[in-house]
Length: 216
Image (cartoon, rainbow, N blue to C red):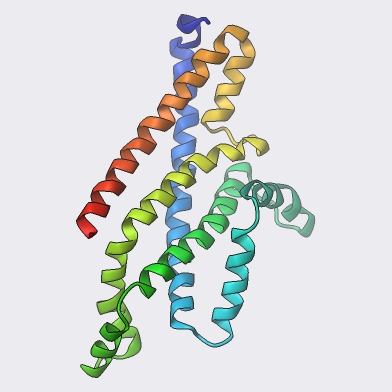
C-alpha cells in the first residue's frame, strides 16, 4: 500500500475535483427533487380527482425501479427518441426523477400526519382550502418531515456514485482512474473516498438527529 504516492498533491486535487462534481450534482438534484416531489406529494394529499391517481401510479412505478436502470435509460435510451443529454445532465435528471418519487411519499406522509381537525378549524375560520394548506398544515408538516428529508438527501448524495456507469466525472470515477495507475494505490484511495463520504454524510446525519429531537 503506497499511501504517499496515492495521496500526492495531484491525486488529491483530482479527487477533490471529482468530489466537487458529486456535491454539485447532488445539490442540484436535491433542489429539483424537493420542488417536484413536494408538489406531487401535496397534490396526492389533496386527492385531486384523476390527477392524484395518475401521479400515484407514476410514483409507485418509479419507486419500484432500480436507480441504476433510470440512469442508464436517461443516458442511453432517451437519445433514441431525439433527447440528447450530457453526462452531467443525464445524472441530474435520473436522480431528480428517482428522488422526486421518494420525497413525494415523505411529503404526503408528513401532511397526513397532521390532525384532520386542524384543516377543519382553518376552513371554519374563513380560509380557503389552499390558504389553510399553505398557512396552517404545510408549516407544521414540514417540521415533522425535516429529519426524513435530510435522511433522503444523504441517500441521494451516496446514490450519485451510481452515475459512474455513464462516466460521470464524480468522486468514485476519479478514484478508479487513480487506482488504475498503480495497484498499490487501491486501498489508500478507497479508504480516502470512504472517509470523504463518511464526513459529509455523518455531518448530515447529526443535523437530522438534532432536528428530530427538536420536532419531538
